[in-house]
Amino acid sequence: MPCDALARVNATIAKQTLTAELFAHQEAAKAALLQLASQLEEVSDVVAGFRQNTLEISLRYRGGAVRCSVVRTSGQLTMTGGNSVLLDRVRLLVEELGGALLQERVVQALQQLYGANATEAEASGTARRITLRL
Amino acid sequence: MDIDVIILRDGTVSVLVTGGGTFTEAEQQVDAVLATLQANGIRFEQISPVERHRHVHDAVELNPAVRKQST
Image 1: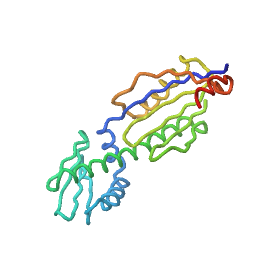
Image 2: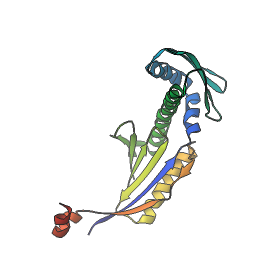
Image 3: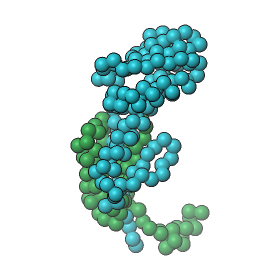
Image 4: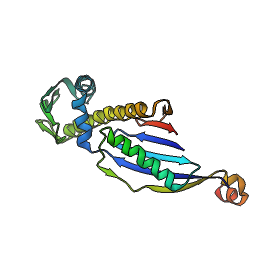
């Protein structure tokens, strides 16, 4: 009876590594942040910018104005003003954006290393899948 | 052997190796992919133990009793 050996492993990239990825692609990250943060519920205006090792995001929303800071080294997000719901939304947005940028980096690394043997296949949701044929 | 690398936005990277080889070979391929990514600056906070499975082709078709039980 034909059999396949099958081995699987899950590796986790630290959240702070995801947020640090924003600093490696500052122009793209800023553009995406401005677009995505402005779509958050009740948010009317967004300003974002990188200053050395800090990403600063200022949001104007129905309840007032808030300023968020993301520290590159620790990935820590702090917010002055606002509430915990808004803080959680911004944190999720920042981590997802960093995750998307890191997805791209992993995909590019595999395609560069494995050349024509690496092909991107369809994946569910926001996942990305690379198939390597050796 | 075929290797699937699935990357999620939450930072999870799954490496799945299938093929008509031994578990040892499959594990070596998993390790090689992870090592390659790490060598290219992708740092992992945690790596799970390698899960081993054996995928049997056409088991349902070859064994009517199994097919009956599964329906």
